[in-house]
Length: 449
Image (cartoon, rainbow, N blue to C red; front, side, top):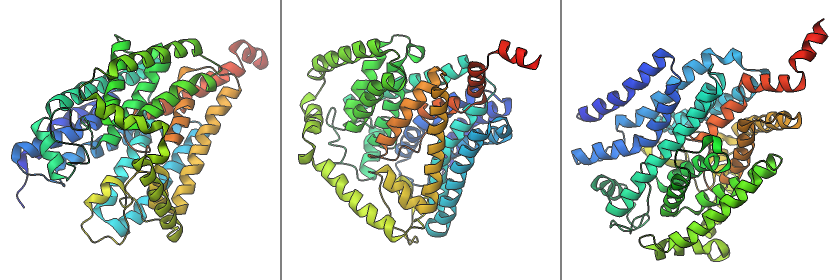
């Protein structure tokens, strides 16, 4: 098999800046890693199209894997700076992925390596942002960078919807998604933007949108135009879960955070609803879009919803029949890398919980459950002691959104703003704020006297 020189050159061109940032110890590595995660699949499609050959083993798929490694290395070197609860959380996460990877290597071969990087990516991002010695201005920049990258993906999504770029059409044909993603004609194809698929696209957009909606702190320059752009692009993906999660995040945020910004959020929802009512009818091919979302009020007659119930039933039986798990790499996109030598069954991720439990088995699933239980316990303890912090608040909101989102897909993958927020909530700086809240400096001075 000839070496794909162009793909290797492109891979090196995108990884060299990441390596330089890692060597410099720059906080910009987070911004660039999120950018690479979002743009990676589109780069690969352009390269494949330019050569007239679809390569499922393109070296371009290594870009996010290497970026994950570059985030992990400084995280491991700074691990000791974490407080005990955060250390336990990360150890549980890493142990779960380690177990799933071990089983996956024995059953699924190379697919386990690729899939393990997908599961390690959020841990790496969360760990890097938790341990990086930065101030809140830098953390805010990370959140806004995710927002601006989202805006870029949305602009490309509209370009994709209105023009159907040749490289995207080529990829849709090669992977057999014609029909599933609609027709290869302007306004007739479902948007997946720069992502691997429409589901990951909608999930990334919705998770980036929630912080922008609930707090001025992370709102972008123009505010409303960016919000409406992101919302409209979620509509173009035809993924109803994206809208549901954005709505859930906006509604529960004041409930979880002592009513903070409740009045502003109510006004926000009213304006968005009005804009949606007026703007939807003016979108190109709006009948197709409105038809897709009209079934939200009548889910018992929705074919997609009923199909998910069937997948859930089959997945539960599969998990019960093999409590050890099929290993990482047996499900989702990574499972497509298997070459027929695997003895496991693939579960394509229409239910995140079942995808995780069939991959990780009971041992790995329990480790993950314990880790997330400790995350919520930490967030709740900080809130219970009266700590008011934007990153603590958005993390509590993200936690609930994550639990709901996992019913429709595997949200425990990808470099999203959710993991940046979790990292900030688990950082030593949060514990310092809590100690300051419980025992102000003047009281500590008195106790030491």
